[in-house]
Image (cartoon, rainbow, N blue to C red; front, side, top):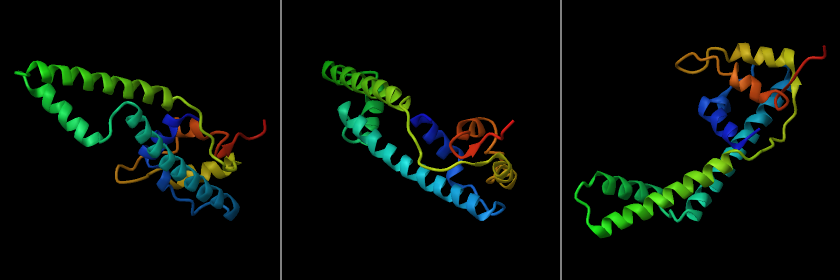
Length: 154
């Protein structure tokens, strides 16, 4: 699994899935998985902050505000143009560092459950959240194969 997968799983709401319909041993695997996912997400947040600093961005909000103000100013001075170029170079460095970083592998220390239990978990969470999304299918199912669930023996 890649670091970008951790972020996407969290953004899709996977950290909030329920596990009421599973056998206790497999329900616990879901609890452990959620804890691992949350811990990985927290670590990624700290890593991303370090990437910003490596790119020379100390305060992300202040940086974004200043960059927007400079870009919106159509009557920049030469000094402001120089600052804008500097900031755009910093932003490009951050974007490049982040793109490389997001492609790095990450391992979650959790155990897989049988596919039959995974299927129960999918059914329990098939109308997840206010939009009633089937969040454990498609990309999420593919990503979590071998992480949270194991393919049945053929």
